[in-house]
Image 1: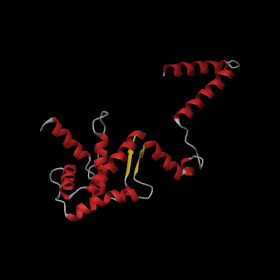
Image 2: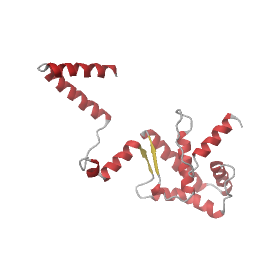
Image 3: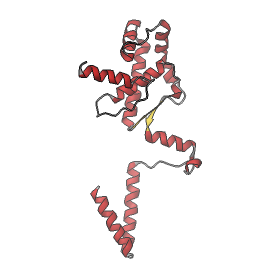
Image 4: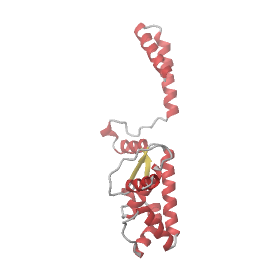
Length: 190
């Protein structure tokens, strides 16, 4: 087996929804493709779209994955039988059961099912997922109901304002001045 065939085989196994996998690889190595294929295979296996949760680390990856998935499902909706059979065989790999006319009709309907899913397909970042959990259960999580998420730029501005206030008051208290000096050194190291 060539390295390319081995990689393709490993990616196909990682995209198999019957397996529990952790995908970790360098940028540009095909992680988004593997996750997109995994979701497509879950949908082909008749998993309800609203029951699928796909989590990535970045907003860009989540957007790219959603775009790729809808692109694939859109192509399936318009593909003739021969092309669709070829794409499904490539997705599922050798040993997959032969597709029936009903399977092809179901594959073509996935685009509409995904579009009609209440709230849309759940392809999001770990941060947005955690935020949605906190919004559903704020009291249990010890968060104030209706809390607002602080964006990175806003958090940096708040941190700088706090450090400025600390610096302004540090001169009157030796311990506070020493702590501020250590904090300033640490901040400059990063």
